[in-house]
Length: 403
Image (cartoon, rainbow, N blue to C red; front, side, top):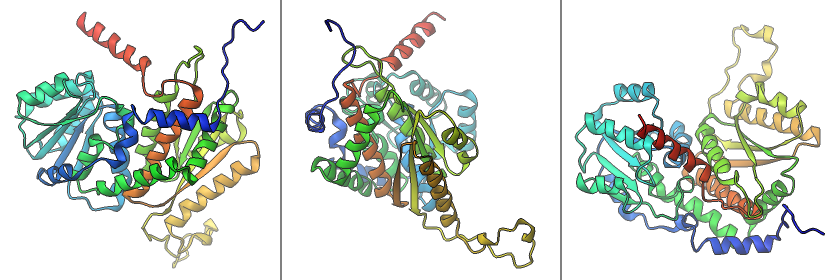
């Protein structure tokens, strides 16, 4: 009996941690918080163009954008960072009409060096602007067509190690270069990631939280297979998109026993999505876990003014007077959390970001990368490949060749 089976034994935390230690020897993202960046900082300081345009798709841009859009609202940056991560013709035309191309530094990012979307946009840029070392940088793996293009045109080339996947590249030159150019402190970014790494690998508090969450999600994946991220700040919207790619592309796999695995990510912004998706969470099917993210201090003291002329007395909301928007959004988050908690059968957790700065967003993002790696190890999948995506790319090229 039991000659065939399609299940697997969930391993102990100790075994999974040993697997992660082994992964460190071949998966490059684990060591990124400890890289040397002085030469990168010096090069970034030499760029004097006003606009920085990142051309990339997926992991080549999402992480960069997540950090930039988190920091930008509260910081006066010395340059403007733009992203072209789509081949939507209207988006491309709009971008090129809006920015001064002669005052733009282009950063072309493609791990494989031949991804259709960024290379198509590069060809268009090449037809509009003379690309030289002073206005264009290239980030790709060694030996790719894009590297050869950079060398032939004497463009600045930065190598992306082959063992660093796109969605795990946010602490590499892929994001550090454009962020440093616009004035974001990449030393603080790496420090935040280092702090998380050191705690995790010394089995501190972060290690305990990550393993506890990962084990729950894996052991209960048949019932709770939808994982909702509820971020209470519009500045985290790009982070949400990064999370969706990291989660979906890493964990939607076939495991060692040929069993399909999936933990479906959903990304929400509070309080906006309280007026839509929250209804589904509270009264809908119990197939979702919720991860709330709050920002404790927005470093903004804007108040809701007092109603001096009694223009709002009919609203009966005097409790809003002299309340800061910082306090209001956090009270809304707490009210939603209490609603979910009161149901008693919706799994949830809360992450509190202390303030809006480089260290905070880096800690959050590296923690999520580690969480995904641990879940992938529990599921016994290859967390770092993406065969489903690659087949789509191959189908596109085949179709284009037939035109």
